[in-house]
Image (cartoon, rainbow, N blue to C red; front, side, top):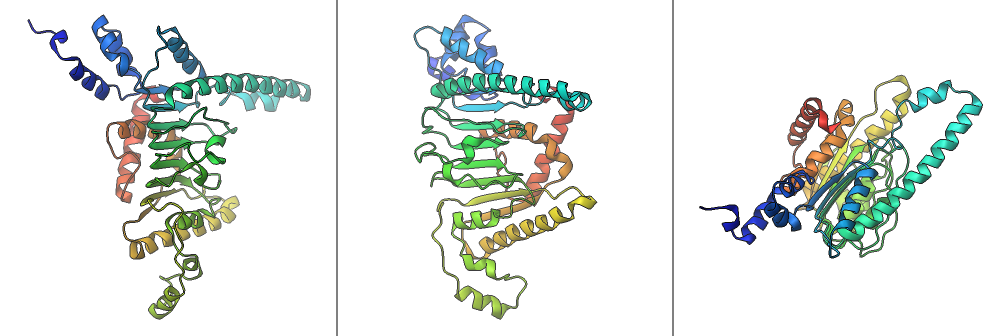
Length: 370
């Protein structure tokens, strides 16, 4: 009688490595079915991992320490979210705070500071321990943070195989100056940048081929200049608007252009996702700046389409009411990329609309994502 043990180990290893691409659920489930699959899944059950709290991350690290023989798993894909941490998103805190007396507020402030200090210490220890194990083999990384307070991260080692990096929130480790060897193989970066912080070029290597900046708003006034420097668009382009002038003026302007060497010569696919300010009497100033930002990135896209072969800049404007679904969307795109899908790397605005509809439907129907 033919049984599972008759299948060569190499085939099982290949099957399990393809199956364990959902954040750890399949790998854990298989390891609990029988001793045979526990043994067969030993090298692939931790291929992709998803953590939504420091407590779960600490529990995983305790599991690793309990393994015999100094076991080091092969971790290729990581998704880390802190939206559900009470210290990061305290429920009803401001309602209670606003009703409290001055003395009570001082006690609450002190309590919050102490709790934040404890949480940060736990987070730092767990983060360093995790990346000491995952760093050498990690290929994709997605970090989702609420953006209320900055999250300081550091890497205890280089990530030589990291190919794709995505994050949301105020994460200091991705915006500061990093050592050049930290991400030598990084090819795709997706960051949500509503605050207008400069793009983190310091962390991206010259191997970068894809860049997406989402939630671009009125405060991203320097975005078009940073992108132009990355792909080598001449500075003179910003002195003339080719599409508002007659053909002769545009031709004279092109003769005065001095090509600039690109800081990222392999960068060929850029997606800019913008969100206009909410309508209201107090947003006239922001609306004016938003129109300027949107106009300039559109000019950059038109220039690349006409004069830079092989460089595509896709500019889209997303609906503000769907900004709250980024956590679900980033998770879905992380899973999609693991399985060879498109993820967030669209080539036309129609594809973005399809993704937004799918994420909105999932967020409403699937309560496990909340």
